[in-house]
Image 1 (cartoon, helix red, strand yellow):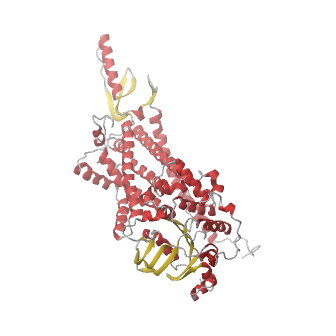
Image 2: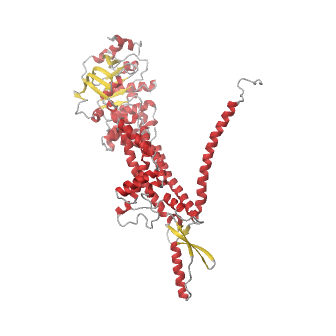
Length: 359
Length: 281
């Protein structure tokens, strides 16, 4: 063994190599996750983006431009050859085209041309009803989940005294978080669709989704409430405030950023889950938009199309061909964008609140 | 309330100043405001206070001293029923009367009680709102809306707490931007804004440096003209400097209660003497 130059000189050996190897293992794991994330998102963006960018159409009147993929309902695609040119048309366009051709041929005294077109379901048009449906489902379900969840969190953290019963409630809530979403779907189907006789409807979907995210909302809201210093409560009570005044003015506002953080996670789940809505709220296809109802009450009791369910339908329930891929990836891309948008706005709101209340 | 700042008016007092309490403070009898009789208090199964009897004089400063866990804070928190917030606490025997009303009686609303008996905490707890909003918090919850009234109370309370000159230009900035001593005086201002009769102070200076402590003590001296003050303190010097009466607690019992001068100069009980002379505690 060679003598070390001085007592602080590095010693080489197994332990040293171990140190650097371990650090690299952790680093590699992180990079691998990053890589797969980039791959998944990149793949969807790359393949889905054209579906959106290729669908811009100019309009005669305001707003002069539209995007058929984003703002139209799904249609069948008709592919046919006419005068040696291969043409692709959506359902409505194809029908008017056929009428026009027939009329023209009759006027010119020619025989009516024969139309032989191959049709591909869902391959034309867009996903507007699905976007609308998903946004409605998210808004309604999160409203219900936050109202119920925050109320229950306030009860558990501010009012309930520590007892066996309260501990049992907490345990039950935690267990609820582990229930698979398909089970929630079946529960919603049995409870809301059949027992309450709400049919496949927004209401049934809202409550099913709300129950699914409740455990997350309750647990996180409770944590957020607990994080508010005890001094704020005592200080307020010592000034003669009642319990509810204290909570409303001096606890809840400071817990709100934390509650919103949890609801952001909830939003992603509510928007993304397919299983709970497939029995309770989602239609494969619906030609009317949700606000096209005869009376206001019907609004809550109608089924809607939804993005995740639409992805499921176009990926596994229809014949696959070269035209379906664009729709699948396009829908997934829009879906990611929509979730990012909703979550992003909640993050902005949260940061704004956080800036206002800091201690 | 005087409208001049006590901090500016009073001569600067050093921490090394001699004991201020002199027998003449109690030359004439002072009416009793709070009368505690035979009080037994429990945290669950554990008894925290044993047969406490104490008569707290009106518009005087009463100090509670004693080693940690002796029950002085517990008694203080009994006086505005803050102990109600802790599970399993109970007054098992005896009574606390403020102006002859039993505050644990069935007809007493603790919310109303706490409006009359304010509290300043060990750890200053300004709310994460503006200085202005901190002061008017108590009035807001009572439903006071008039802007002139609120402005008036803010100025009066801040002057009362000797804080006005330091913060008058930044009333709408966060109360958390103040220094530790200013925060504690803000809490005092917030308490006097609801015009209580009694101010309970639970070790108000334990987190403050000597200069901030001196300011709070000066403030206490000013406040006793208008309020009855009870201060729990670990610092015997503080009790000697700013109180008129001192109660010494040990193991949940009231050992001795007398004029501050007597407690420090001429204690009757050997335990008190041992404590104030620094032989234990």
